[in-house]
Image (cartoon, rainbow, N blue to C red):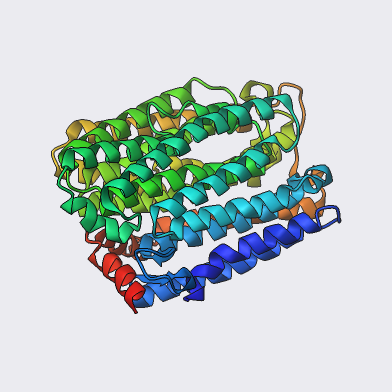
Amino acid sequence: MNWTLALPILVPFCAAALAFLLRNRRGSGWISVGGSVLSLILALQLLAEVLRHGVIATQMSAWAAPFGITLAADYLSAAMVLITAIIGLAVALWGMAEVGQISARMGWHGLFQTLIGGVTGAFLTGDLFNLYVWFEVLLISSFGLLVIGGQRKAVDGAVKYVTLNLISTVLFLCAAGLTYGATGTLNMADLRAAVAAHPDQGLMTVIAMMFMIGFGLKAAVFPLFFWLPASYHTPHYAVSAVFAGLLTKVGVYALIRVFTLIFVGDQGYTHEILLWVACLTMLTGVLGAAAQSDFRKILSFHIISQIGYMVLGLALMTPLAVMGGVFYLLHHIIVKANLFLVAGVSRRLTGSSDLYAIGGLYRSAPLLAVLFLIPAFSLAGFPPLSGFWAKYVLVKASLDLGQGLVAFVALLTGLLTIFSMTKIWAEAFWKAHPDGRQPRLASIPARARVLLLSPMIALALMTVLIGLFPDPFVTFATTGAEQLLDPSAYVATVLERGAE
């Protein structure tokens, strides 16, 4: 067995078990931080292995593919595991200053590590049934994180979140069952040939649409996004940050994996639907954000609008478009998680997340203002930040295919994103606080200040670094897109490794 693939999943669950056992002790959150550090080291090791070999795979308990449990990683998988570890460490540190002892005793840190383990497992699994299992792990742990704190609106948001995600999970399981009944396998590498060879391609398209709806619910695409803005603004800000960065991206990843590896026989139909879904997701998300006045609600709707860009790369299905989708996926996780962390510090300093009830942050907390502007400008697509290159590639890919209307929607969404970010800046940072309060960072204890600011500064620097030196990241995303569009190496590695 290749432990390089197994350990990134195993470590978060070990950290979760230890955090649960010691949850009544002060400082138990450092177990989560330590587990996140180790996860980051293992993710870097996994990425190095993938860079050397292109695709790596292993079989659990020596059961040969396609019958056993497969773990596999290509460029996209390895990058997603690494970015998960980075966000996990950033939020684990930040959460040490926000998550109180009561929430820690209720198991917050253990649930957080369970969530990270579930996300990592979803990115590394090589079969559909275990993807379903990891979705279940995500659902259970995310529900626990949503309700910890006991506030009425948190419970209400959690119920909405779980209800819709349960529907998605049931639809996914039904689609997986039909797939197995029709092909006799759930191994994703094996399914590529099995689906293509099936005599009833109409049935395969129906099953593909079931997967599209199931994963679309988890990714919060149009018109299936309504659960997200109803729940993401209710829990701890640390929970909102990790949800915003990672959870919907698991759905996007699943869409990309399934519709580049398995269901590729009717792209004229499925990808036309994805193209309309992408455009409508961008527009409805950004218009929803423009109508809000709560910091977290604005950011929640912008998760939806930015998901549209990622789906757009898949829908256009050219090498440049898929590369842009991969690049956008990785950039957005960093930016969106950081914006929620900034919102959390803003709430701590001003006492509210309502933009019309706060203000004065530019003068009294200029460092926080800078830490907001960097991810905000990146989200809107300002050069030379990472968001500019991601949007540029997707717009160019649209124009190359003669999709002028799609390019216009992408650019319009960027302009309306600027409007929302400008509204946050004007109300929360530029104008004076309505109560005359001077919300200074120095009012936060020194230890908490370090824990809050360090992850935000690191994520902001990553955004700037990707923007100023995009070449290695574009090259990486290009190779990742090539592997997705020509998965022969993935299929051969998984099936040959199972035969050894």
